[in-house]
Amino acid sequence: MIPYGRQSIAEADIAAVVAVLRGDFLTQGPMIEAFERAFAARVGAKYAVAVNSATAALHLALRVAGVGRGDRVVTSPITFLASANCAAYVGATPDFSDIDPVSYTLDPVALEANWRPDTRAVVAVDYAGQACAMPEIARIARARGAVVIEDACHAVGGAFHAGESGPSFKIGGHPWADLTVFSFHPVKTMTTGEGGMLVTDRADWADFARTLRSHGIVRDPAEFETPSDDEILGEKGPWFYEMQELGWNYRLTDLQCALGLSQLGRLDGFLARRREIVAAYNTAFAHLDWLVTPGLRDVRDRGTTSWHLYSAQIDFDRLGRTRPQVMAELRAAGIGTQVLYIPVHLQPWYRRSFGYAPGKCPVAEAFYTRTLSLPLFPTMSNEDVARVIAHVEALDLVAIS
Ligand SMILES: Cc1ncc(COP(=O)(O)O)c(C=O)c1O
View 1: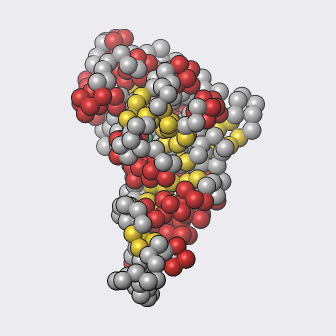
View 2 (view 1 turned 180 degrees about the horizontal axis):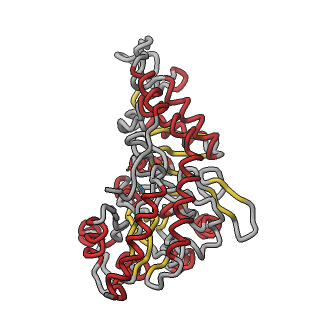
View 3 (view 1 turned 30 degrees about the vertical axis):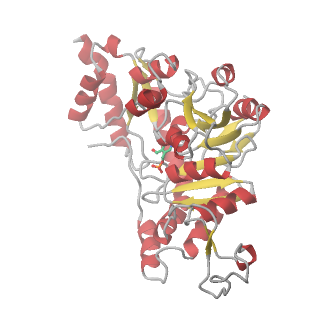
């Protein structure tokens, strides 16, 4: 079975993890800072904070930016639940704005048209690895005092161009996001098993995120709040720490950071192979009038999209079959596919809690009815790619016969 996505683990990755297992620290050791530094350098950000999931990173992003009760957070409906749930974690109202029908990322025109006075943050999701229209989104949000968080979970290692002939910017290192979040779940472009990274150029936010990822604990005596004449806690020895905020255990282990560091060294190879596969699919599918290949008309895609997903738009009516039937046919041929994503505003909890209903984001809802993600991962062989292409093309023939 060719799955829709999977990790690539090499002997070097295994050796890196084993070396940590033989050492002194399984967690809270030196690999964390090593991974953070290497990651920040790679994406061109000043600070990177490693956490145990991107969900945790999104939560911390809103928390350090001071978003909370009474605030609204707008994201795309075509995303994983976590991009919106983070707003609810901090007591804010998650809201959704429609996507543009080409890049499948937030449509700046819709974002501006539906802006509400209580919107304090935008979580812009780089769906499938395609960069959002970040300069436009930042212009809209910042003019209204809102913080810009880029959910780049799909875009590890990606870059984008500001306009057709503009300069190239790395995701995580450009000036239009205040905080950027990456995921290292196994189907993403590199993995730590579970894991995430929060990057920012603001030292105060990075420091605060580090405190919050470990229970809100402060260990630096220079920062202690308890006075030395405190009746009970006045004596402060080497054991002493203070909990100054309500935090969480969002720490990533040294084992995972060693894997992350090793995978980071292989990232360029992963991305190059993903692009090769996308190019092969796009060429093969160009003549199919019932399938729209992703990203072709996106001027921002100039070969630097990290391509986490290959999401085709399929006209199932023209094929004469439902999406479950097509998925079953491909599965019978040993090809796994996936539907990414169910529009988040239509999940029962969102309907029940906020009254969201069909029609709120019509472009996203139409996208959902036609989307199908085909296998895309770096260890796919050329034979695997050819097999997917042959069976997708044959869907048409089956319909005609
Ligand atoms: C767009 C997006 N945001 C956030 C997340 C959450 O990532 P994690 O699984 O690392 O918590 C995911 C993971 O699927 C995602 O795809």
